[in-house]
Structures are given as structure tokens and as C-alpha cells.
Length: 160
Image (cartoon, rainbow, N blue to C red; front, side):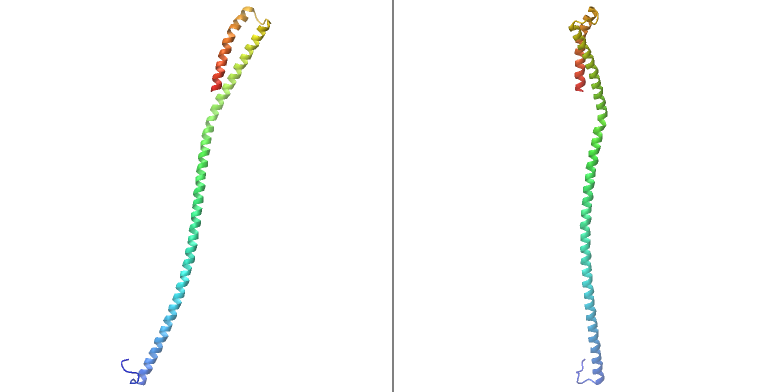
């Protein structure tokens, strides 16, 4: 290319022309390859963006599922604790109920003996002889003490 185009021979001009054509063809081929690479890059970028969007949506769903799981586990723990506390409370009711039933039975027995004593007093008060006068006087003197003791025991049972 040091020699001017007019000074060159026909072979040199043909060789330069062929080289320029090959150069132009190679440049066009490379530009085509670049365009195709740009299109592939754009397609891959689009695919990456779609994948990232899907990944973000999946991450949100995962977070929501984990939050729901944690909330359900917390509710389960609360309910389990409530059940355990209730079972603990109910475990003591058997012995308490047995004591209360025994106290009620004792109070009923005392009430029955008091009613018997009252009936005896009414009978004595009405003048109907039920026993010998000496025995009646002895029973009459014992009755107020028995009634007083029974009333005190019934009050203690009711407090328990």
C-alpha cells in the first residue's frame, strides 16, 4: 500500500481488491456474529430476569409458609400448655372431691343425730314418757353438749 493505485500492476490491484473483499466479508460476518451474540445475551438476560422474578416469588411464598408454620407451632405450644395446666388442676380435684364428700357424709350423719336429739326433746317436752325419769334427765343433760359438739364439727367440715 506504499505504492499508489495507478502505479501498481494489475495483479497487485487484483490482490488488494480481493483482500478488501475478504476483509469486508469478514467484517460483515463478525458484525453478524456480534448481532447474534447481542440477541443471545438479551435472551439470556430476559431468562435471568424471569428466573429472578420466579425466585423472588418463591422466596415470598417460603417466608409466608414459614411464618404460618411458626404461628401454628406457637398456637400448638399455647394449647399444650393450657391442656397441661388444666390436667394438673384436675389431678387435685379427685382428692379434694373425696374430702368434700366425706365431710358432707359426716355432716349428714351429725345432722341426723341432731334431728334424733331434737325429736327426743320434743317428745320429752310434750310429756310423753319415753324412758324412766332418771334416764330422761341424764339424756337431757347430755343432749345440749352433743348438739353443741356436732354443730361445731359440722361447721369445721363446711369450712374444709
